[in-house]
Image 1 (cartoon, helix red, strand yellow):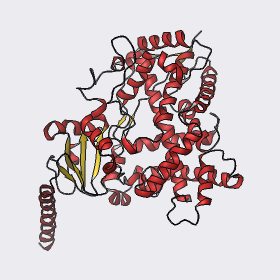
Image 2 (image 1 turned 90 degrees about the horizontal axis):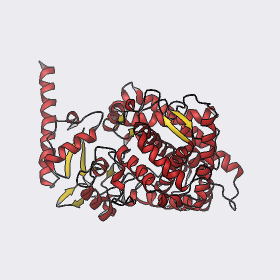
Image 3 (image 1 turned 60 degrees about the vertical axis):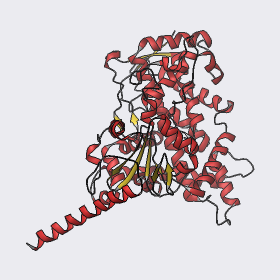
Image 4 (image 1 turned 180 degrees about the horizontal axis):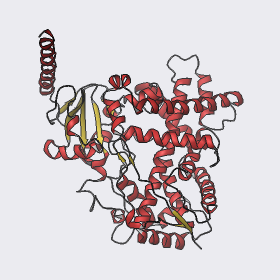
Length: 495
């Protein structure tokens, strides 16, 4: 009897707290949204595999700015190009805050560029952009690195002698190729495709992305304290991440031992030099913890996002062989099969450029963006977004917005071509987000995706043993990131 009374009292307390939340929601002039349940909020209403599809559907009832609760976390969702652009570009200063995603915060220990805010974010972002550009990001020097890496990849594919090339499978050919570009910038070296430790790191990066995009990973982000007490895959994910941390710290120590401040070799050297210069400055964010976590940020993001996009691109070309053939004809006419492609060729390859853009739009690699966080009360479109609210600029709704794309749910290169076959831009093409927290490596990723895809099509024709109709372009994991499905791929050298 006593237990029943206690249980009922606890239940009434939870309900009362929830009613208070709803009352304060009305008083604060929050954006409208669906009613939820105590403790779990609106979680049961969301598609656990693809929550962004539910958010898009809910916006039909509640509009482009809406409030819901992921567990107890108040969340405002921005839907459609107009709302996302107004927030991230026109009110950029209000929306620069980064949401404290528990999984990433635990993995990076709260340091580094990716999840930082305020002065830490400003110092690290300014330094990272400047340093990467100094080492060639988005410039001619970077083209040469990518061209050289393309030759390594082609040689490895040819060495398979007609066997299946698991470009999207466990061999990690493509991940290694893309990763070597960011490795040259950050670590000052490339790694062999036969380096078992390097391949193991690539596997860890891939598995980390899969876990973060899985329902289990999302559950950790919503109920981190509870999940810490429960057994599950998240413990293994953190163990894997520690391997990345150990590798990064080893590389940093190697740089310390051989550092010549007058002749920096890469990002780590530049950071260590700045760390030494500002070691007695209390406001400096250049210390070891930020270096370790920022390097891991760059290594992971610079490896998986571009390589996943290229893998998806190959799936598209196998699914639509006529598109592949048209690209190859255009590439052969403009470049031939001997000269390495360069970014200057892009303006002479409008169809190829359109396909590359459409691959990124259709893949929709980060449908829910990386969440923002209100660092103060924000006034937006007549509503108040209170401090400590998670904000989701729904990129999925921008890349698939029906009024801005002729056939948003179909793969269609004509989205980026005018009536004369010339390339045309679309302002809603925002795969790298927008505003002050847009992807720091956007120019590098654009260059990699274009040059690697052109180089591959210049040398090979891609197919799979089961035929084009067997290729499913829907993602394997759809939450934090859309991951392309894996197929055995045949790369046939072009004569």
